[in-house]
Length: 297
Ligand code: ATP
Ligand code: PLP
Ligand code: MG
Ligand code: NA
Ligand code: MG
Picture 1 (cartoon, rainbow, N blue to C red):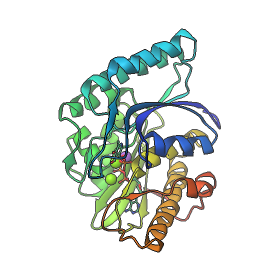
Picture 2 (cartoon, rainbow, N blue to C red):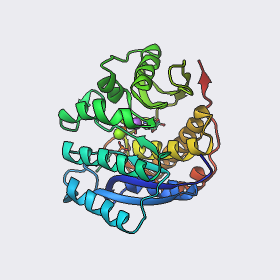
Picture 3 (cartoon, protein in one colour):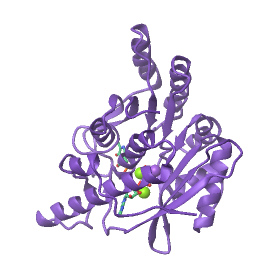
């Protein structure tokens, strides 16, 4: 671990707006990382709009890019970051990419956001759940599911903080030493639970951060959150709680700015999902002002 790194980021690209690579690449660059994006899709806009158009990369096309890099000895990465993946064949190619990158750098950190759904709804094919659970999670260094995804990956129902902590323990046993459940809603509160198992088989160090829920729906925030967790946890490898405080603080400042800007422009922020004000928040990305503190269990 060091202050910087080379990140291969395989995520969506949208022409307009900030989800996937569009919300992950700029912040990681601001934190000092070299980031090489592979766009798993190129869409006009995110899928929350009434329509979208564009292209989807398939597994063979992804592998072609990896072969091109390999032919020039360009496959040394410190980190692999993956987010939304829409098909089993693409996810299977991701597995091959992980193995290939680890054959070049055995210390590669794989940060996996197992994007499958939210608020009780799956938005990927059901067969993907099995592949994540059996094949992808075991290879991940850090996993950043939301509440629903953590339930899908563990088979647990998460109705309490205790359940969230237990889900993290189950996920550690399957592979990743760092797990952050990025959002859990319990009793109207928004909660993040982090867990770091420093030695295999040991009790993990766990913490929570209580987040003030902003009454609006944003897109791209999950992707931004995972990118920031990668960026900060590499700089503070033994303090996942600190990394999470920094990431959450950036998110809160950015979301307040986003909401304020929409309101000033006369939009009703509850009428549709809001595009985050990423570029305007660059100071909050570089130097977050930590207001929300992690509480250790
Ligand atoms: P995934 O990418 O796996 O779907 P997710 O569902 O947790 O992750 P989000 O719901 O976007 O992604 O939440 C990520 C982070 O964004 C949260 O930890 C929180 O800091 C912030 N966030 C998102 N929505 C809100 C909100 N309405 N109010 C306050 N913070 C929010
Ligand atoms: N990728 C694409 C193409 C999307 O359309 C969306 C949301 O609509 C996302 C990713 C999800 O972004 P997030 O989970 O970070 O809000
Ligand atoms: Mg969510
Ligand atoms: Na997440
Ligand atoms: Mg999400």
